Image 1: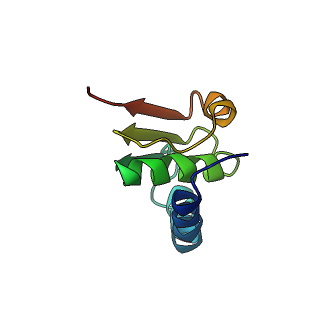
Image 2: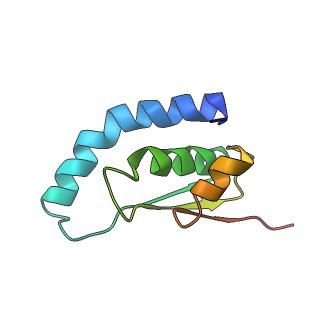
Length: 90
């Protein structure tokens, strides 16, 4: 499926850097918490894609994207409904 390649690569790197830390926290001192990821601008695109990567390992993961750029195809955007909430001011 079509995604912004640069932001996808950033999400992959963040996944590699943070997955064990987040998993450990959610299994330990943060047990029972839900995972929420947020970002602004380019970070919003990365946060959205990271939530997409983590949705199977972390059911209920949510992303809040503030002023995100176009990051995914229309079909994939529909699939992400309910996972990512975005806001843009005009």
